Picture (cartoon, rainbow, N blue to C red):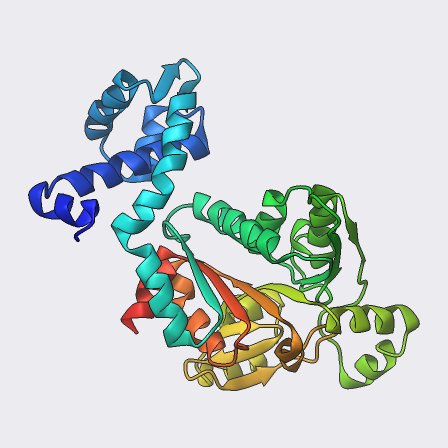
Length: 340
């Protein structure tokens, strides 16, 4: 038997585009509220004339309210938006895409959130929300969660809430600093995660990359040695996937290294490893923290990255990713990954 969505596509061809447009408007208002019409039009890439008629319709349905501060969702609007989320996944075929991508990449699971992180700043929040939900489903008993830095990990931290029951959580930085703003350092993110879940965290004061001599000296320090043992015994890892050149520049890499990465056609980076499109490691930094080989024994590895511009980086890293990986990404990246 055909689903209602399949029937609607045939009998009412305009139904789905209109549904998707109104869903996008409600979703954007929910993120930006209170928001003015002009700002909303720019965010959605719609003309104010088209948006005006849609807004009037939504007001008539008591889904939004408007005042001098801007537009906001009513309680009915919030409820409808929540109910629509599952249906929109079916409309867009997201469930099917997740399964296909999972099999193509040979990993444990794929979770796709709506939107393209390159075009909307709100998609990162959705990635954070999906990641937090996934983590909560995986927590059991005592948990050690190793976390890398970055703005995407910060978005995950913002979405975590207190745990119920007797679950114990310990958040540990998976590596030293990368030179980001303090708010995006792994130490800061772990502290926020622990505060939001009302659990515990550890700090890891060590540089991100060092010479071989300094590395051998530092790992003998009792506190660093203890943190490294904690990281290696983690049962969950949260990490991002970066564009190779962006990450190299963020680390203030030398001109020689930048040229080496460019000549090697590096496209992706994770844990201090740089990959080309074939997934080959073209450069590795001497980093203090989790190593690629450590991931093999960890039951849940959550790789979180979105935006169409990250598709090549994701694809490259996934060729080395352990089978226990759960990729949490967005439609922008997923569509390009599925196109191959």
